[in-house]
Length: 116
Image 1 (tube, helix red, strand yellow):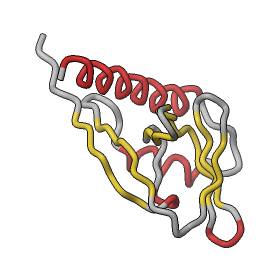
Image 2 (cartoon, helix red, strand yellow):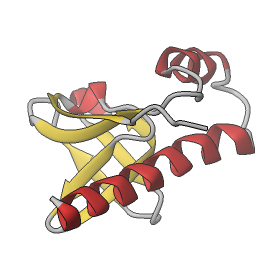
Image 3 (spheres, rainbow, N blue to C red):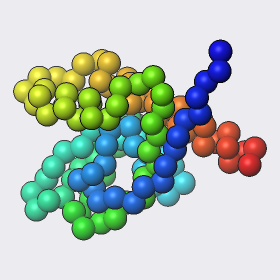
C-alpha cells in the first residue's frame, strides 16, 4: 500500500490565522497548537499540547509549519465545528486528530532534517 506524501508548508501569518494542528517553533521547541482564544485588543492566546500558553499581539507575524496529511478531514471542517460548538466542550476526536497530525509533522520534519 503506497502512501501519499504529507505536504508541509512554512506559512507566515498573523496570530488570528493560526489553526489547530499548526506547529509554532518557539526557541528550539516545536509547539503544536490545540486551541486559540481571542483576547481584548485583537490579541490571541495560543494553547499548546504541552499545556503551555502564549499570548501574541495582533500585529505580530508568526512563521508556522502547517501540514495537510491525506485521509484527515480538511481544516474547514474543524473551523466550522469550532464555530458551532462554542457552548459545548470539545470532543476527543476534535482534540486527537490535530494532535496526531502535529506529532506526525514533527516526526516527518525530524526524519527529513536527519536524513537530508
